[in-house]
Image (cartoon, rainbow, N blue to C red; front, side, top):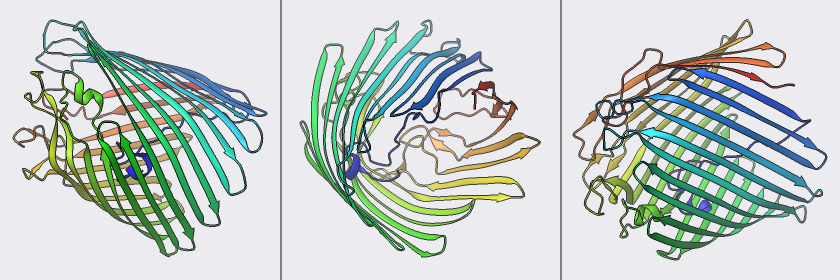
Length: 468
């Protein structure tokens, strides 16, 4: 979901929302195993299974990914900065009867990533562990009325070695959502509570937020309408009310025009306010966005163009030292920022080749200084093509970016770049799939942050077994 969505999701939904769904078990018990190798000493292994048995569905997946890495900051500490990552996801569902369902979900990630710190002779490690869990009860009380009650929690611990630094964040969320459907009408109402706690050295801070959200949607003939309003009461920053409205009209077969507007806010995290890089006086971001779109689709072909503008006050960024006690930089508010631009997308199948692409023309700007926001390009281009030849799937991608500035003053220029990637895959036996990929075929040397290297040419070969 793109654009301001705070009227649905509350704080943080300033410029879009990404929601992740773990695998849901379907059909009989189905296992899978995969292995892969690449340059920079990369090795991966994954395994899991999924399935459904009467009223129970289940899935479990585990992945191990390691790499020797490369020197991330040339001229600093001349060692390779690798990583070791272990992750898992699980989902268990119980369809109690036709009207009621319980679902338990969980994810886990444990990352040990080397980096070049500020002392050349140290082997620095960043240890990041994230665990999430959730329990949901869904109920269909009548043909028109349904509810969903969920409780979820995430715990993240970040630690650096050998420099002793650690912080632990715990988020707990309670959500009670109601839906009433009748014909093309949908009415929603939700109550939500979020509890946030930070433990950082001698700092132990917590806060909470309560929210109520109302929504109305209508789909009838060529018309689509969506209206939302939400009020959040934060224990530190008080009340925040946000709203959004959107409309779509299908004026001809395959053609659709849309318009939408919304407001948003983002409360600074406890880490941004009270860690060693924090500033307690940080204020919430507040934004207003508008977009107008035109889309066409017919079969496998599509085209879209979207114009948008998003203005944000008190944008939270990481800036120079001064507001906090740390010498390397502090979180700060940028008075007024604006993101505006045009996104063009398209897809078409030509002579057996699937073509797709997108072009972003944007102007991310600090309205107080009339400078472009740091590390944001004005032009981004993505092109892709794939086809099947004698049982092989062959594909290529082109990623291109214009120049960007590394600093808010727009003095340090990071040059534009273009990357070409290639990939192939083939079912080599009944239950075996071979895949290979080369990123940055031309071994382009580029930077997205001053002084930090990128991996150069990368290759990867993998083999996956999954019975059908």
